[in-house]
Each structure stands twice: as structure tokens, then as C-alpha cells.
Image 1: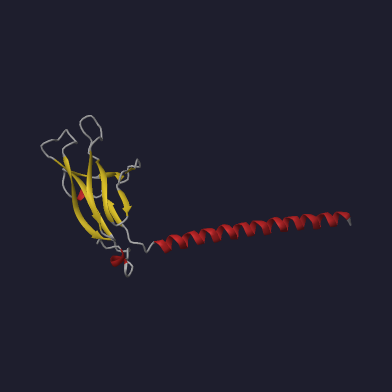
Image 2: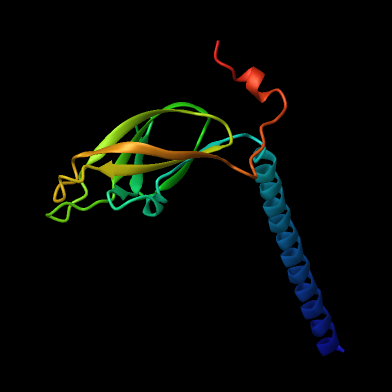
Length: 163
């Protein structure tokens, strides 16, 4: 009889552990789902994209650009695409063209008044007469595209218009 009661204790403790794990899993799942809903809920806030990754379709003197800073905040991740809030920004770009010594030390700042739900495709247009230098270039906005999945909420323009 004693052995039977030990087995009941073991079964009871295993059931308690299983129920605690189930509760823990449910809590984790609810946090995950809640987090997803908050992200999805924020997705209706309009944004713009600066894209320096698509210069290859232009010409041999155009090169991609890395986004190294936005409004004084520096980025060290070598990204060529970043989301930005609509409005005026100072964006620091670095050309991906390597000079004769193999260095990427050429930066340019541009001012951009980003409209909501727009993608700004930019490139570094280098001087073709300066083949071994990466310092002689300018930023070219190749095109501005609509972001298809981005929607501007009703009343956003009026609330965020410049006075």
C-alpha cells in the first residue's frame, strides 16, 4: 500500500509540473500574441524608406550608398536601407565605391523632406574622370516610389501638415 501512495505523490507532482509548464507556455504565447498585435497595430503609422541598395541598374559610375547617420545619430551597421519617419531629415551617406587604397572614407550629407509611404532610391554618382578616387561624387535621387503596403490613415495629413 505504501508503494501505491508514493506513486500517487509522484503522479500528483508530475501533474503539478505539467500544469505549471502549461500555464507558463500559455503566458508566453499570450505575451507573444500581444506583442504581435501591438506591432501590427503600429503598422498603420506611415513611414518612408531611404534605399541606397539599388544603384546597379543605373550606370557604371553609380554606386550603392550606406546609411551612416540620420539627424545626427550614427549607424555602424552598414545598412543600405532604413525606415524613417516622414518629415525633414539630414541623412549621412557613404559611397560603397572603394578608392585605390581600398578604403571607404567618403561621406555626404543630404537634406530630405520625406513624405509618408514613399521610398527614396538614392545612389552615389561618381565623377567618371576621377576613377581612382571615391571623394568626387554626389548623391542622386534616382526615383521616388510608393510603398504599396503602406497606408496613410485618414486625417494624418491634416494633423501633420506644416504651418
